[in-house]
Image 1 (tube, one colour):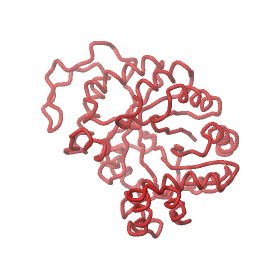
Image 2 (image 1 turned 45 degrees about the horizontal axis):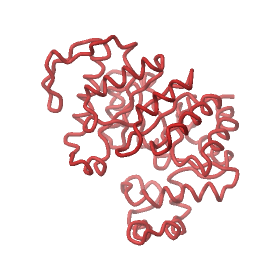
Image 3 (image 1 turned 30 degrees about the horizontal axis):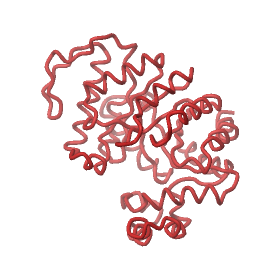
Image 4 (image 1 turned 60 degrees about the vertical axis):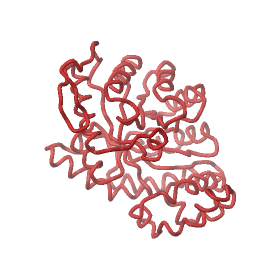
Length: 331
């Protein structure tokens, strides 16, 4: 069983160093940092983390081929792998349309862009020249890395849509599918399996991380309060398919969206988050977390990735998972 942490890129760099050292000590396998626009740079954060850790794998979750050109993506990934001694994983996908819109970019042909990027990167990491005339990438034979990478850097694809999930199975070393709720894994896995079957691959070759939201604390109410805030901000934007898994609709979030977006009243918005909405993630004590995760392990999950908000105290949440949860599932 593999365990990883996912963090947003909105903390001071020294915080990531401290959390990564704690995560490595607690028994986590991977440490992922997002690269959302106009926050701190994930590659810089991960460079600092690489220097402070020895075993922990590090990765981006995610970069996209619109704001970071695939040529620069290859340079960054191969260099971070070198800095970390072969511990870097490249997480990429098509990016968020809202973020791209801020800088006047459109996510044109997102699946094509991701597929052509993955194919080109694998060739670059293998030391090949990459001449291609695709729909997204048009490179001459002068496109190649002028230094020798340590290895072919593992590529993880972030995905929510069925077609992108298929590409995890068809192309990637691993996958970072967001699971809202965690049991959404039942809907995700068939698409990954289908992609793998089309490529003649076994699922055993692919590290699929069950990416969940969680909030953990000894005080269940405090843990739930933090997750309620996350859901209040983002619940209304979730797809009808995801919400249907919980018997919810986007209309159920109307009053919450109004409180957040129009009234700027997050306190009121949190009071409107129902128990059913809380099931989008996992909130409570480590005992609550274990109980819910057991249902994922029973479904065949072999990698659990804990994502924001993690809890009212990040250090305490990481330590608690390392103390109670990781030994439980490994023991």
